[in-house]
Length: 220
Image 1: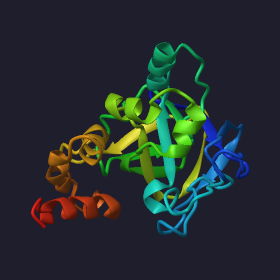
Image 2: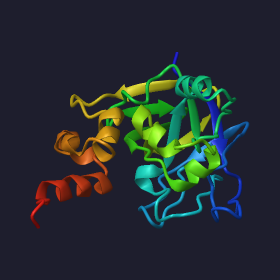
Image 3: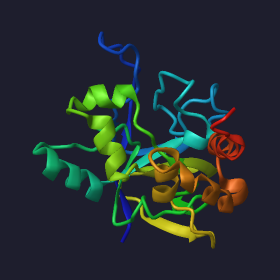
């Protein structure tokens, strides 16, 4: 059964000397937490109450309210890197078990506890993530693997916690998966027009990238 293996939050914003403020250092927590829509990108923080976000320009907001990464994918990375990768190290709020995030479709709805989360888009690695991992060429390796984890919007507020079952309540009939969206916005921009099949579930930031691609001319 698909479930939340670990619920992780950053209980405070940290200020490492090498890269400024960050909320990437998530730690597992016990008990249940409230989940809510945090507000628009640029002003809203995390969808997990009590989880701190540092740079609101690129993190948090309704379409990046909750970040999830699969334990199975962490284990694959751990085997490749030859090191332990504890829950929360990738900055994920939810470490999941028994469900593919890469194959989840944009707009898919997951009931976890009393909350309903909607699959919104893939995570693209940032400089802070690369510095935290401290692995040679980490961003390029993460992009090449194309197993990015998923951001969720909060469709229905509620509470969730470690051990909660994950129930997929709705799966759209298009084929726009997290994996496809990630490849489109990173190494394979020719795939961008395919993302429009997700309709209104496609985040505005991704739709803008598709539209820029549609109007791009090498001669302009």
